[in-house]
Amino acid sequence: MGDAAVGARSGREGEEHRGRPAETAPSAADETATPGKHSPEGGGDGPSDGQPPTARGGPGGGGAPEAKQPRSFWKELPILIGIALVLALLIKTFLVQAFSIPSDSMQNTLQQGDRVLVDKLTPWFGSEPERGEVVVFHDPDNWLAGEPTPNPNPLQKVLSWIGLMPSAEEKDLIKRVIGVGGDTVECNGTGPLKVNGKTLTESYVYPGNTPCSQDDQGGQFKVKVPEGHIWVMGDHRQNSRDSRYNQGDKNHGMVPVDKVVGRAVVIAWPVNRWTNLPVPDTFDQPGLSAGSPSAAVLTAAPQGLALAGAVPLVLWRRRRSGDGGGS
Image 1 (cartoon, rainbow, N blue to C red):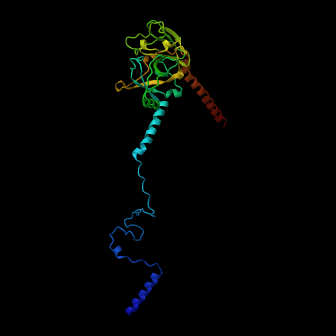
Image 2: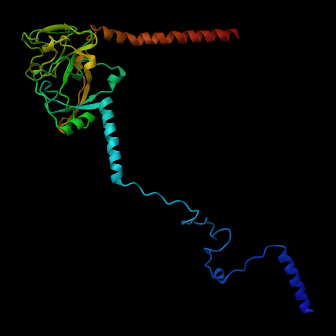
Image 3: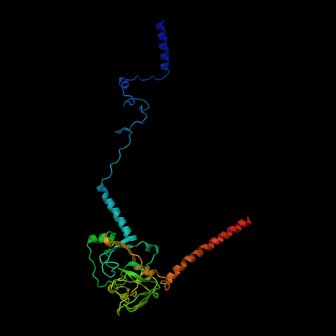
């Protein structure tokens, strides 16, 4: 009886087992595994702590590829140098360039050996030199004849070309703009210097110098500056071969605006002379621009533009009002 009951139960269990897949019996290793961990070769849906299984590399494995080793600094150095040189060349060509002062003609504003930074960006947007600015310009017509020329070595030439050293170009000059197109500039006796009949108070002139030079070589003059040109003079009046002493050239001492490299904006070297180069207040006095047609046009231009912009706006508003009234 007992055996029959056992046999019947065993039969029913056998039928139940035949209705579903047989489960693999746990091995001794599984029975002794530490709780919370799984056997490397065991089955199941994942580790008991709920974290995804770690990918395993190796030949034929589906694991993530190993991270690439970073490139050596010495391999990247030439690339970095190349990028720096290109940026320096672009900055020197379009933004700012360093120039070295070769003479005493701009004392005491600039000393021989100073390094100045010249703004080359604003001329790209149509800006032209203004009175009082210190500008660098290419030699208009052999002004530097007879002057000693520097002889830089090849390395200095390369560094100068890319803008990492002050320009070694010996055909550039630096002076202060006194008159622009349409201005009348004159000197009588020892001064003062006048622009459009207005006296300039020139605090920047070298101590001991007179604003005008009493000589028959160009120190006494009255000139009218043509449009597209500027009249320039050095701050060291008795030691500057500027527009006054080049009136016999093809430009009559004037500097064509297209010869201007840019405006000197700051003294960058030596460190103890760091300063900017602003326009002196004497060039801001009322009425100074009265004799300049270009200045008059610029003064009237904003009002004209405002009127031109207002007319279409008024017409548009009137049309909208008319449309609204008819609807």
